[in-house]
Image 1 (tube, rainbow, N blue to C red):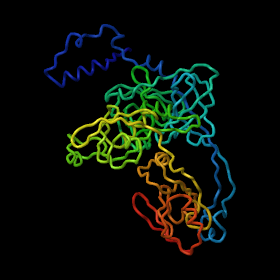
Image 2 (spheres, rainbow, N blue to C red):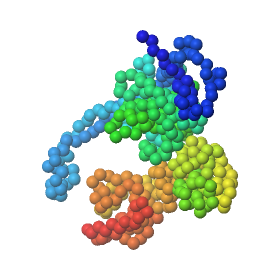
Image 3 (cartoon, rainbow, N blue to C red):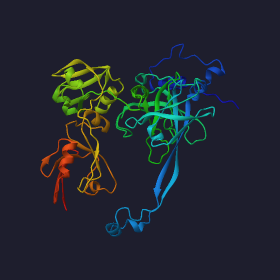
Length: 474
């Protein structure tokens, strides 16, 4: 039996009428539906247009493992027979992962999540019509959890979703989430935009998300968040859930960030992101009062890179950045997002609060400089830092690692497992300040200091702003 489905607009009007007794509908608002077509509400036309551009992503990687008996983990045996004792035979196994993706250009450019294809040896793309293509990873960006793929269709144009301006979204807008949650075919869920500019999600380094109550299930990662005009406004990335099930809080990377990642990836797959050269903190109520701001908003600049884009444009320590390109920034994450969506070589218009009034500044954005060269080196020899990979700090390296501190120095970027450096407690991200009382200024200087013979090593490292001292006796 056919049942009536009341249009969303009519339900909304009824609710508004119930909430306010003084409301009186106009003749157009009070018009009664005249046909079944006027009553029936369906997303089917929109889904038919958008769904062919949403694909399934199958990634495959070979994982090498060793069979190890718990007996061989005993420190007594390792002390006498060495760290490699009893590691056993190497075995290989295939690890598969499933996700979704969105075709964003007719020539086969596809966007998905970085975590869907991370470490993959092979990536296969399956279209909605079940055709399969081997995909090439053009580039990926773990900071935004995005990856760009390409498939060769022999010149055939593929259906795609055009990128919309995600800044045009408003809370309450209807959206569809399309993906392949369980590997059984496409699914579509509907909902609304429940929040914008979510910056404390912890999914990626560049935290700035569209929040939606459209159900995003496991496997939907990389799928499309579609506006009512059939455009791509976001790439579904994560859900807020303790059980793994959708609880109505999902997050998508805005399409403006997707656009900048696609544009920023160079021919060698490396993403070049624009750099401001300024860092700061969110403005609290107390800070706002002390600066005469009408309300707590913006980013208080507390660090500037000398000679960087922001410094050259006239930004000063103590300024509060209120807007970028006319869009409000509420905290450092939103400032980073606004700058990241602009291209290298473009100009950013900043609205700044200084000494009780607003000022306009224009900043010419550029790529962070590789100065000094990072000189990445794995330390060896018979000394406490053997097995640590170190590099010179530069703005480019700091940007890659997400560091606010770009002071010159030497930082640990990686550690070998069970190495001397790991055993003495060194961690990635530590800055090596001094060795045996001598300050460390560069990787070459550190290598020279560690080549010296010593019966006792005294190493100072900076970890999160605190100085730690490591003493090792031979």
